[in-house]
Image 1 (cartoon, rainbow, N blue to C red):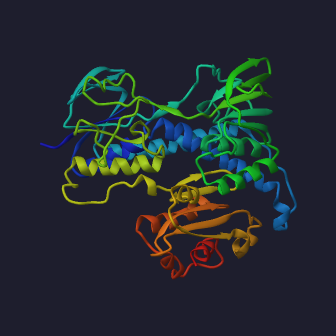
Image 2: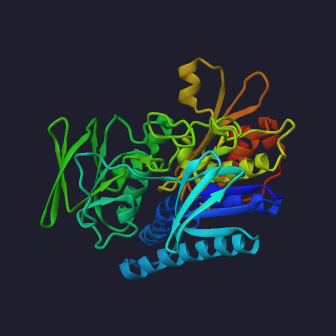
Image 3: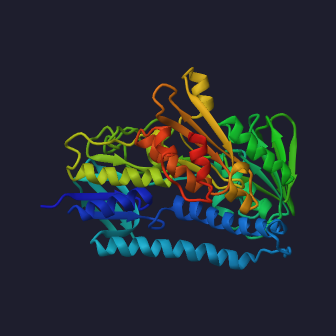
Amino acid sequence: MPVRMVIIGGGPGGNTAASYAARLGAEVTVIERDVVGGAAHLWDCIPSKTMIATGGAMSFTRRVEGMGLHRQEASLDLPAQRRRVQGIEGRINHHITRLLDSQGVRILRGAGRLKGPHEVVAETAEGIEEIEADAILVSTGSRPRIPDWAVPDGERVLTTRQAYPPRTMPDHLVVIGSGVTGVEFVHMFTSFGSEVTLIVSRQQVLPRKDPEVAAALEEELLRRGVHLLKGARAAGIEASDGSVAVACDDGRVARGSHALLAIGSVPNSDGMGLETAGVEVDAGGYIPINHHCQSNIAHIYAAGDVSGKLPLSSVASMQGRKIAEHVMGLHTREHRHIDYEKAASAIFTEPEIADVGLAEAEAFATGRKTRVTKVPFAAAAKALINDDPVGFVKILSDPATGVVLGGSIVGRNAAELISVIALAVTANLKVSDIVESCLAHPTLAEALADAAE
C-alpha cells in the first residue's frame, strides 16, 4: 500500500513536496484554499518582482544618454501592468497545477485542518471530506502583519498585497518598514515616479544587513529623493480624502497620498487544529521543526513561512524536497541537512543586493577571525560597458584555510552572481577555487575572481 501523504497548503514548500513524493510513489493529496503556487509567492513575491522589473526598465530609459542614446521617457500603463502581473501569476499557477495533475496528485480546493494525528479535514465547495494520512505536511504560509493602530482600506492605507499594483498610482507614498519588503517598494514606486517617504525604526535601512551594504542602498535612495525618517516608529495612521498622515512615536508626522504597511508577516497556523493533533506551536504561532522539518509529532512536518525558518520561497522548496525524501524513507542514512545559514538571499532594489553565509558585521561581533576582500564593480570592464559601475563584491574567507565563509554583492545582477559564492559556501570551496576558475570576459562575474584573489 503506498504512503498516504496529505499536504495542507500548495505553496513552494507544499507543491514541491507533493511533486517529489508523487515521483517516489506516494499517494498525495494537496489541499489549497487560495492558489496553487502559494499566496505569498504568487501574490507577493512574483508581483513585486514583476513590477520592479517594469520600474527598472523605466529607470533605464532615464539614463540612456550614458549608452550613447537619445533619451525617451517611458510612462506607466497601470491597466497593462495589472494584466502583466496577472498573466505571469496565471502562467506559473497553470504550470504547477499541470505538473501535479500529470503526476497523479489530487488537488482539493478548500481549507484544510487537522482532526487528529492521522486525520485531515478538507472543507471544499462540494462538502466536507475526512482523509486518513500516514504523513502530513503543514505549509500554510503567512499573511501581512497588520498592527492594531492601522486599518487598511485598499484605497489610501495599503497592505503589500493591495499594492501589486494599487488601484491608483500614489503621488506620495509613505512606506512603513525598512526591511527587505519595504525598501523594494521604495525602489519600485520611485521608479514609477512617485515621491516616497520611508519610516526607518532604527538608524539604518535593512537593519539586519551589513552596514556597508545598507549604506550603499541609502545613498541611492537619497539620490532618488527619498525622505528618510530614521529612529521613528509608526504609531497611528489617519486617512482623509486624498491624503494620509502617519504619526510616529517621537512626535514626527509623515504625510502623503497613500501609506503602505511593510512590517512583516504572521504565520497561518491559527484554526488549523494543530493542538488537536498534539502539534506544538511557539508563542509567535510558528511550528518548531527539527533538521528533517518534523514537528514534535514525527509524521507531521512543517515547511515554508509557518516553520519559522527563513521566509524565502527557495528555502520552502528545499524543505519540501527534503520532507518528501524523508517521508519516503530515503534519509535512513547520513545525508546533507538544510543549513539555513548558508541560504542565499537577494533584494531587488537598484542597486541589487545579495548575500550568503557569514556577514562581516556578524564576524566582527562574534570575534571570529576572517579575511575580507572587496572589489568595486567600477574596476570591471563589463560594468563600464553597461554604464552601471555602482556597487562591489565582498568575500569573507577563513584566513587559515582559505575556505569561503560568506559574501555580499551590491550592484547589477547581484541576485544572479551570488550563486557562485553560495556554491562555494555550501561546498566548502576555497577562494583559490574561484580564482582558478577561468570565467568569461567581459563579465561582471570577473569581479568575483578579483575579490577572491
